[in-house]
Image (cartoon, rainbow, N blue to C red; front, side):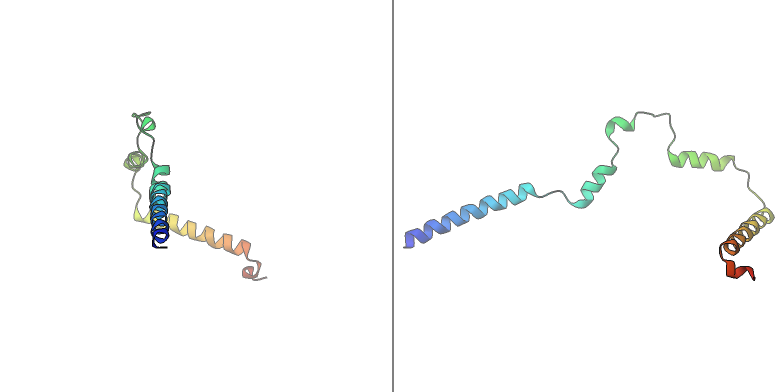
Length: 99
């Protein structure tokens, strides 16, 4: 009986070792590596258009071309935006019209 227990134990140990190896090879990469892989730029696309500016560079170039406005003009624009928003709210809310 001792021989059969040893054989069974050996068979179980072998099966456990096989299952451990299978789990190690079947384990998918961590979720963050999968997401990073989907966001990565393929190497062949990185240098397709070297003459194009990055988004940040184009925004910086546009800002450099803009003329700064005075505080008075900024206040006037903000007031107009606020009034337009208030009118839009009043148009969408019949009880606010005072009928």
